[in-house]
Image (tube, rainbow, N blue to C red; front, side):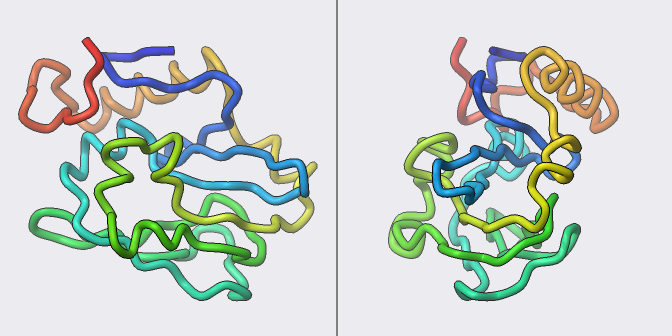
Length: 154
């Protein structure tokens, strides 16, 4: 799926308010990463520092810090659980988030609390794209501004 030149792959869950995607893993864990829209908003990412594995993460609380051009932002989790793993490759190559946000640029893996209940809070497919379109409208996002959209595909 594509919105204003930004990809939103099918098969993932999305948390538009957090600019994050979620992927269910076979072992019951959930991988989280920044969406293409999140990357477009941040611009070039210079560092990502995650909390330590084993840390309990509450919903709406930080699982790490993203540093970009002139600021840093707390990456807030849309779900509660235990942080199992951070993407160590991002320590040396944080730009992977910008280059491959849905692949090698993933951020953390969590073991969620009560996943069947939490899962219903996330969007897929056209519902996710519609929510991102509304978020872009509210943010005043200008799809014609090529200066902020490093991940455009058109």
